[in-house]
Image (cartoon, rainbow, N blue to C red):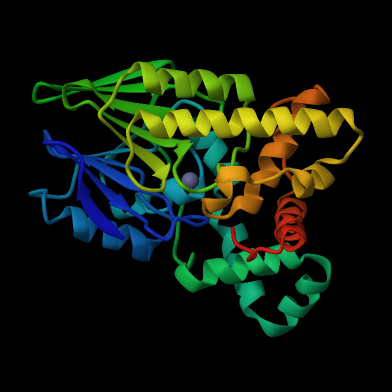
Length: 325
Ligand SMILES: [Zn+2]
C-alpha cells in the first residue's frame, strides 16, 4: 500500500497488488477530514489510518462508503464515533453482501487441509480465490458497522469552504454506487464504478447505466480520478473502461447469437489489449452480465459465487494464464 497526494487537500491510499479485495481509500483533508472507504480487513484499515495520519491532525470525524462491498466497508469499525455516510440502500445491502461471518468461515475452510481437499474437487475456483485471499487478508474480528447518514440522489458537504458532492450513480456495479466529486480540486473518488488496469467486476445494474456513469465521470472533467481499484488516472481511465465494456458486450452478443453459453463465450473472446490488466479471466463476469441482459433477466439477479469463481478459474485454464482473482 502507498500514500499518494492527489491534489491540495485530497490523498489516496492505493493497494498496488490490484487483485480481489485490494481496494483504494481516499482522504479529503479539510474540516476534520473525510475518509472514503475503509479497506478489506482490520490490518489494512489500520495501515491506511497510519498512512493518512502523516497528513491529518486527528482521526477523521466522517467516513463515506462508496458502496456496500466488503472491501470498502470492513474497516468501518476502526472509526469509532464517526459519521458514516452512504446511499440509502447501503446498510441493508451490506447485511447481505458483506456479512463477515460467511467469508471468515470460507477462509478458515480453505485454510484447513481436509476442507480444502473436498472443496477442490467440487469448487477449484473457491479454493484458488480463498488461497489468494489468505496471502494478504485475515477477516477475523471484523464486525459490520453500518452507515449512519443516508441520502438518495445527492448529498453535499461544505468542508470549510471546500464543496464535496456525493452523487448517486447506481446501480451500475453495485446497488449503492456513489462517486465523490471535489470540484475545486478537480478530483473524483470513483469507487468501483472505475477499475483501473484490472478487470472490472460488476454485480448488479446494467451496461447502459454503467456507460452513463462513465460518461458523467468524463463530463465532470476531473484532473485526477481515484478508482476503486488500481492506480490514479485522468478521464482516459473512464474512456478505456467504457471501451472495454463496449467490446465485451459486443463480443458477447455475437457469441449469444451463435448459441454459446456465457462460459464458452468467455473462453472464446480474445482479451485483446485488456489481457495486460490484472485478472483478465474475470471477464467471465462481464460476459455473464451481458447474457443476463440478452436473456431479459433482472439486473439484480443473484450470483452463485462458487459457480462464478469456478467459471473464472476455467477461463484462466482455457486461456493458459495464471489463475488470479
Ligand atoms: Zn471493490
